Image 1 (cartoon, chains in turn red, green):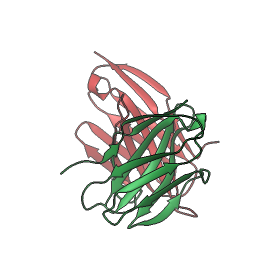
Image 2 (cartoon, rainbow over the protein chains, first blue to last red):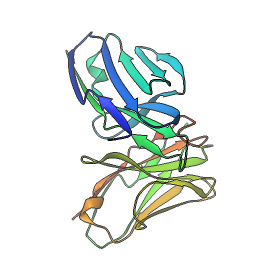
Image 3 (cartoon, helix red, strand yellow):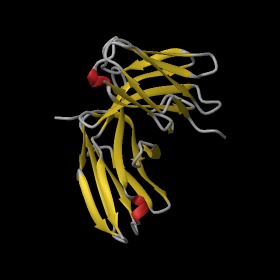
Image 4 (spheres, rainbow over the protein chains, first blue to last red):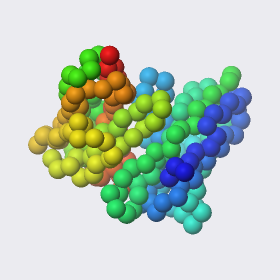
Length: 110
Length: 114
């Protein structure tokens, strides 16, 4: 079992829909990151969370430390939101390594 | 403020050769970390350098190495290339150790080994 699991793997939605992407992890963490990767490879860091909730524009990220779960929400989705969304965690023990989820490919149809 | 710059953007090498990739971080950032991305394995952490010292290392063979210079620029070297080393190599810079600070990514170097 991977230490970081994302769901769904693929998501197609109509423009304007509310989007939720989930990330579950099985290890102790110092922080959790949500990343966005567009075709061509460029990665943008969206959020860094260690507790609670953060909001930036139409994007909202939440984390529940006790349940080892985080969600990324997109309100009023737009075709430009089409990208791969990746969850990453920094473990808080041993090598303090960074572990990535396999990503969620989001496609927003106009 | 200039972003993270990786060079070259594309590279084709032959099995057995070695390759050096370069990453120039955002000015003032002391941490540079490297990642390999392949369709099969996704994103994997290679190593992190902070103030010229390797701070963390992922589970990659010794053929993968790196270094950081006093101006925070970093290089990554892969020796004795294998076909499986074909991947997108990304670097990221941050003010503190990534995981605990926001990271800014370069556009990546796409390496093809033939």
